[in-house]
Length: 283
Image (cartoon, rainbow, N blue to C red):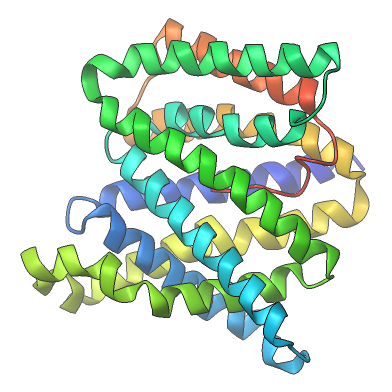
């Protein structure tokens, strides 16, 4: 279906428009607080949509879901810390080293070695451009990449159990409750009044809907009509989408070196596309 990539692109645009809204929100709230607002907003929407309490949950299933949600929120915290310091497109491209590493883990095929080399080269270019401005931002993007790898591995266990979106709903809700104190502590100690402003909660809910609920729903539709390997190829569009949204909404125009780095990462994603990466859209 020619329209299927359009659904995927719509999900990608929603995802990174949400990230751009989060960048605007950083003017009032710190990144951990915004990440928590995203988690809380996504949890409310996903719980209302999925109503996961209708399933019969085992203790092990709940523990795995909670771990999945906690890793997801942790990944979002690291990602928001990164995009508060470096351009959106650069952060997204750097964090894609996580999925590429998982996809090529334990293999020795020449194409996988090439994919890792290209991804590493792209990250090196992007990190080199940003290191002088904010090495901490690069560090957080790499942390998000590592957490994304963990998210994929946990997500596979959840998917194998046939409860992907329900587990995500429960997991994010549990993580939002457990992580509320540590993620909101900094904001409460500095500018607590921000959290009493309805606009903060409205924008936070918007970030959760745009960056989590909408893209996951559209991805589930796409995965029902295309092969997972083709879905993995579609993932290569994400760094370019993020760079485009960053340029349009945040005026973060990439330099030629940054464009080259993003292109290398996208090429690595195409080369490494297989079932190991498919279905894991991360941020």
